[in-house]
Image (cartoon, rainbow, N blue to C red):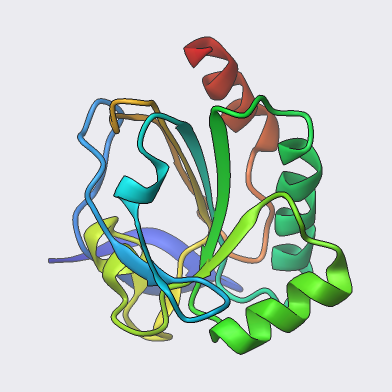
Length: 170
């Protein structure tokens, strides 16, 4: 399934691959890899609220701001909140980025292998094979409670709206 008219990059329209997920939908499973190349799935975060920050590439200024913002916020969240960042960056690049950038609270994961997250969650950019900047908040029963797919990919997401959605769940 391909969807158009949802996002742009520097004003240029792009195509998203996968379904349009909405609040109330069951969160689809995915398989990504961590910095040590070990598979990670949605089930690995069972029993937790999940804040999923999605970035095109950590080596860009806005993505850098986004993961740092969520990493700082993760330090203030209770143990039953998992803060994830998923990108198409290679696990080795993510490991280097997190080490040099002090990312130690948000769990940075890579979808580069199969684009499982991007395809299942409807945020894979067809033309670039990157993930669309977005945020999902998922409850402990794996029901999606907040979705933001950022229209213009070079702009930051609405952090406050995502945190307000999380607060309403807790």
